[in-house]
Image (cartoon, rainbow, N blue to C red; front, side):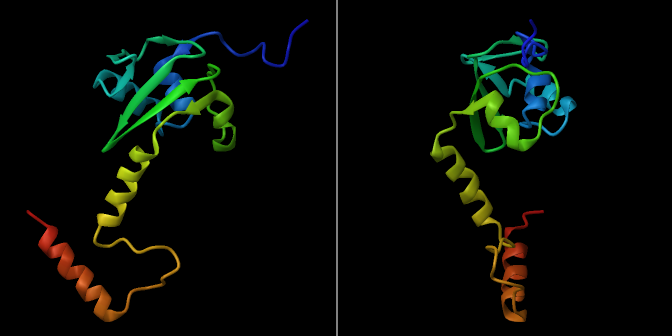
Length: 136
């Protein structure tokens, strides 16, 4: 008797899984990240064709921070963002997400939500900051 989850594979290529759980926007980007050595399992860089199974812990370097996830269930089709927690556990420490928040706060044009448009004076200050940060 087939179960509701019988259509799910026991293993899947890592590049396909990273795309399916929305860590990368396209499968090409996930393949490229694997080839560049930004995707690791147990500290070892993996090729895009590496098969993953339930329970594997994957570390992905995304810019200035590293995301660590555990595979709960392999899947071959992309799922909605609401269903991602069914297929992976996010083990990333809060300190990694803090790095991302600090980088966003450091951008001279960043304004927290709800402050509205900058005044003319604030905009001039922002423009001045951008000019001093531009090293070109």
